[in-house]
Length: 477
Image (cartoon, rainbow, N blue to C red; front, side, top):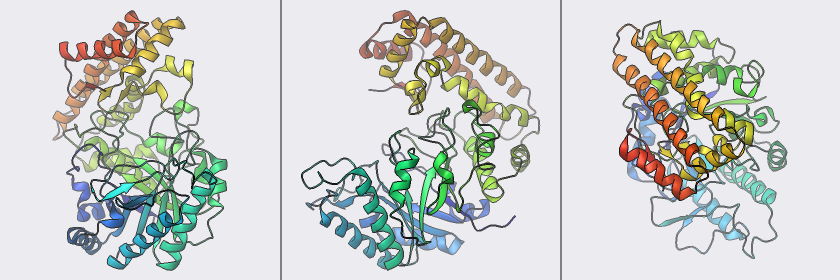
């Protein structure tokens, strides 16, 4: 089913670790998978000021392979010696406009530029500085409210990148809190009214209301009027074991999150942009941890799914999964097991008791476990509150159920016919069971120790790690 939607590949490195080594950076492989575009380099190194011969070679290689190329950076990225940086100062905007012109003049072969604001990473280039346009409250910015700042971004990028330089521009709506433009439809609508109608200007939003957690409604702004939209999907889920455990997202992406009561009502089969520019796809990466999975198999399962749904959003996801299983020489008996992986993730990672108590969309389950780390403050807060609410036995029973589910799915995995991926599949399900058992006992100890401080929670978690290590688990400082 032919279409002109973009399928943009972006490998998302961690700000704290070395760049990921993966075939998902290979232009030839990306083309063979069905990608049309690639983000060659991003805000980690400050691309408004970092056009090197090596980068130009990478750009040309991707174009030669048949991909359109984008470069990405954060706003504001500025020279470290500059006094500019406040959104209330005109020279901050003028410097940004000048650097955009310089980049496009140096690499006119790129398709366009991508920008974010609302979250800023420190650049690896020491000659650059980053300023969050939403946070500055100096005298120059005192009369400039959040809507005005965001609108000025739209105005600048559409004017300079699109109309003046003739390139495409994607604005990733990235201030992700519950009050941010990403989650607040009214705020987003007010900001995007500044768009003057250039068809080369796009906005991009995550498929979730806030970040890539479960218990997130389908992003209601997806169907809003305004510029053509990209929808963002993360294949190796950063908050859900970063590719170490199977986690098929097909039904969620197609039909909406069942845990939010939306199954069959949302998802891209039911709610998509009026002018759908395509999908921004993160095959690997996201979050703050190093890579731990020894295979990209689970990421690839989700990648195949979202590429297929971007081509045909009405396609049956069970059929897509069967197709991927056949292409990877996996036993067809594995389909039923992989279809249940999403339910296993909900049990392992999220806490129904806490959802009843707090009912929070931003950071559901308080992020008691993030990437590869336990969060002592969140664990203490949950344990204390659950005990105060006399719901400790409910939490204990939840963790018993998670362990039983992990054990049952491991038993099913052990019965699968042998294939070239058997070792990784079995190690994934074994680790899931070990995590379930480890956290079942950990929550028992946390609940018994409540009330406890963050320091006491940290000490308890560290003792657990020392006495019963389970790689790659650690405790957040």
